[in-house]
Length: 375
Image (cartoon, rainbow, N blue to C red):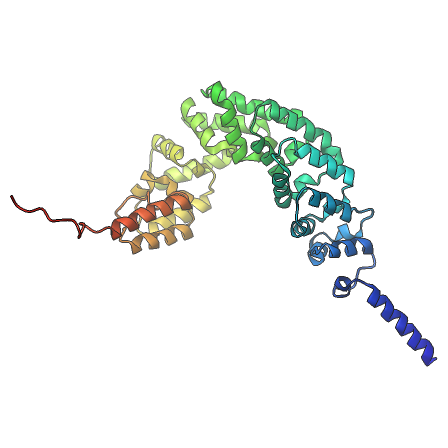
């Protein structure tokens, strides 16, 4: 009896030794998981625990193509570490057959400069690359359509990567939205010679604009026209807001503009000028605007200064306070000076801050220059 127990234990030990070291160090496999899938992923150093936590259902599927997908990615130039990151982030990739992956590679290479660029896109947007084969025809047709518009290949790849839904749907839906945008641009006085560049910038700023109903754009432009904006001003707004004008709606804009006008105590004409200077004002809710007005006024800034430089409203209260402290350290009193050094992007602020720093450190006279002698 003791010999039988010892023999059984010995066989169990042999089975444990037969398992790969990386599997022995991991938690016990779920009975429903595909053992071959888990082994193949471990051999590629993929974070299995991350997959189990977020997309564990993938480990239960069959058939899978772990090795085949990994080899195709490596053929494109992806390192082992990049392959592991891609599969951990988007494990659904292993459900794509080699033929699907090759077809996608061929499709994407029609707009990518080289395979290195494609690997970079897959690493950031794996779900956009590993799509269903049923979308392939729509993807191909949409690529051909955007190429017919003479859009830059970089813009097309950005659209495919960041807004893949727009390429998975029938090309006719994109044609309708693009025609609506072009028509609005021309009706507002845009020049046809500049339309391609304008459209590229718009799609680059907001790739999701293609997924919005064309009626939304028309409704928003009609609302703004009713608020007194001229045709030229509407074109300026459309260009500044890029595709984000489709994120708005008349009701939210009506409440925002009414609150802003009441708080700043300005006329409708002055309000339009403020919006043209700071189009982002249209996005903010009353709650956000109230917080930002309160933060600015609490820092000693006057309402007249805000009206003069409304772009300061684009900054959160935390950023405003941080920048005020840095400017104050170099002797700039934001309460009496212009708000221009305070507003703008991080790059804009650093440039303004650097100029103030140089101005403070620059000597009033050159101590090594010879003094002028009286004649």
